[in-house]
Image (tube, rainbow, N blue to C red; front, side, top):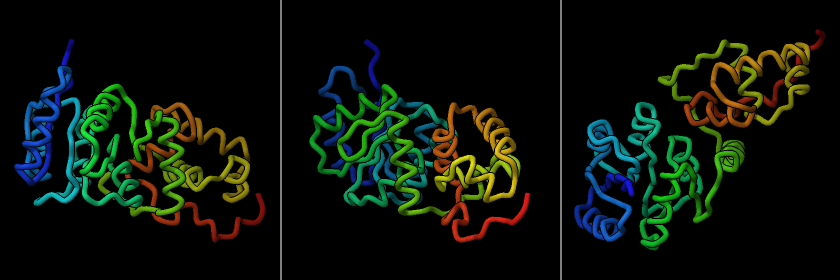
Length: 235
């Protein structure tokens, strides 16, 4: 049986040692490396190409969420589990936007953490002890975006045109195709054509996946969709 290769990222050697003891007692897990800060974590990701990284948030040099975004941007196949002393709902949201597949407080039961590592290695997501599918995660992320918002991260460039990005932001805001058409003063068919182009360019299957794709890359600003604006008059 091929083992799940894990890297532990935490600035406390004692915590790393304890995690390593827990994980190496499992026959299907192997710890292949450690890092003490976010910058070192990115180096280990490049060097070792692990299956899963256990990532603290409060790290020196580069924090865990910044390191997660850097790693997922370059090596999207690496699954990241956030471990933190700060179990805050908004921080969970920002961790998922950064690319994390799971989030646990540091006092998580070791057996639950082991189950999470196996789950994310199989393509699942774990939030609040609940296993989510990709579609369920997408719905959760959209709901939290509307609650917490998020800032634009301009270093992530979009392949979409200006109009396509405008439409995608309205999709994230929860508008239907008909509502988007009215809001922008264009035809319903034109909106459908733009949506088709967006899905094709992003390589996703539906509107929800496109919205999640944009959210996790920081393309969508706070108060996206300009809901307070009046729709244009005329065709």
